[in-house]
Each structure stands twice: as structure tokens, then as C-alpha cells.
Figure 1 (tube, rainbow, N blue to C red):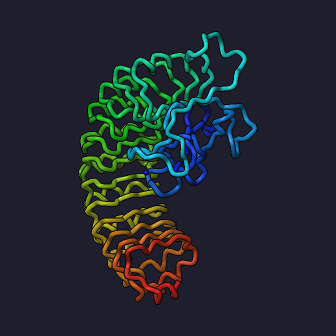
Figure 2 (cartoon, helix red, strand yellow; figure 1 turned 30 degrees about the vertical axis):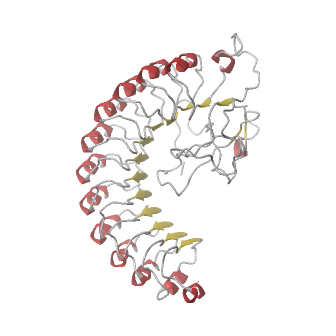
Length: 402
């Protein structure tokens, strides 16, 4: 809702041409597109931003001066899912197309055909009216590694046109109309490392088609009908480091299927039916660094299980049944840098339990019963750089303690 692993094509660690910029108003410029970065399953921490200078096709930042990257955007600068223009991008609601620089050896092709773009490595078509017919024109884009078809008119039938794009490594967003049949068309894209299927119509039957995509490191199933049975189909994807299961039908029983994913570093379980019992199944995921439990039924008792995940750096317990009493179970998480407790029953007394989290840099107490009483306990968190106290009972008196 931040990044990370490479693939076999192109070489691991090679820069990839993400087709977005920082969020509007924070580095975006009028006319640029915006898509939700898949940097991390945790939607607040570690977002990556591999920026391209879209006007000339050259990388910016550490990769500056390397081989030119050709990219095309044919989309709208809209926030994902809400239909609003990105802040600071007035006039960005007009479709844009940026012509690539000419490259010798691109091969023949009549002006206006996809052959003119044969060097494309990244293509963003989000929020366009592209249909299955348009995908037929993409067959010649054999160098394509990054593709975004979010909010297009593409269906399962159109995805068969992409079978030959075997260099694809990053699928930023799939059309929402995609079903299990569509996933079958993607099963041959063996170099895929990142696959975003959020809000699609795929079921456990479709996930069976992913078994051959053993290079996958990131899989986003947010808002799909994924069930406990579906997770059994993921056992063979042992290279997975990021898995988003938020707003799915997953329960405690399904988490048992994840025990073999030893490389998992980021797990999003927001708005699932996971309880304390389910957290016991996670104790074997020793590499877990980011865990999002927002909106689950986790209580203080379940926090005992999290105390064993020593590599956790980001933990979201917002809108759970956790209270200040349970926070003592987190004192052993020495690597924790970000803790979200908004909309919980954590009180002043609970703040004392946080004093041992010496590496904490971000603390979210929005909407909690916290008041001035023990705010002074936060003084011990010397590395704290971000503190949310909105909608609490804190007054001027408490501010003095900061």
C-alpha cells in the first residue's frame, strides 16, 4: 500500500524502468502519470521510486549516464482507485504520449505502429481505453520488462497476445476483469518477479497457474477472493519476499500454508479474519521484517507470538484489540523502527512499555486514549522522528513533555 530482488532477465540487480514518479505534490510534475508504488506491502514505509525523465527517456539518479531507456505513457495522472487527479498536476487529465528518441537498428515499421517502439522496456497504459485489440499491436515489444494495464478494458482473451513477451519481469497492475482463464495466459512468463493481481476476479483455481513462476518475489492479491485453500497453491513460490493478502478471505487456517515461505520479508494481512491463533503460524517466518495486521482481531495474547520475530522493523497493529498491557510483549523487538497503534485502546500506561524500543523512529498513536499523563515516557525514544498524536487527549501540558 516500500520496493529488492532481481530476476534472471534482465540480470539481477539491473535498474528497472518504473513508470511513475513520487506522489503528486511531492516531486510529481504536471502531466506525469502516477501509480501506487509496489515498494513494500506496508503502504507507508519504504516506498521505492525509480524515476525516469519521461521527456527524454533517460534515467535520473544513480543510473544517470547509463544506456538510454525508452518509455511511453498513454494514461491519466489519477490516484489509483479514487478517480481524482493527483495533487499538483493541474491539466494532467489529458492523455499524453511521449515519442521515444530514434534508435538505429530498431527495424522497419510504418509510422504509428508498435514497431516504432521496438526498444520499449516499460509501458504504462493505466486508465486508458485500451482493449484486447490494442494488445495485438504489442507482440513486437520483445524488450518489454515492465507493464501496467491497470484500469484498462483488457480481458482474459487479450492476455494471450502477451505470451511472447518473455522478458517481462514486473507486472505492476492487471486489468480488473482478469479471471482464472487470464492467469493461464501468463503462466509462461517465467521471468516474472513481481505480479500485481489486486481487485481482479482470480480464485484459487487461477493461482494454480502460478506454480511455474518460481522467480516471483512479490505477489499482490489484495481485494481478491483468495481463500485458505488458495494459499496451498503458493507453496512452491519459495522465492517470495512480499505477499499482500489484505482484504481477502484468508483465516488462521490458511496461514499454515505460508510456513514454507522462508524468504518472506513482508506480509500484509489487513482486514482479514486472522486472530491470535493465526499468529502462532508465523513464528517460523524468521525473515519477516514488515507485518501489517490492521483491522484484524488480534489481541494482547497474540503479541506474545510476534515477540519471536526478531527481524521485524515495521509493525501495524492499528484498529486491533491490542491494549497497553500487551505492548510489553514487543520489548524484545530491538530492530523495530515503525510502530502503528492508531485506533487501539493503548493508554498512557502502555507508553512505558515502549521505552525499550530504542531504534523506534516512527510511532502512530492517532485516535488512542493517550493523554498528557505519561507522554514523558516518549522522551526515552531518542531516535523518534515521526509522532502522530491526532485525535488524542493531549493538551498544551503534554506538548511540553516533548
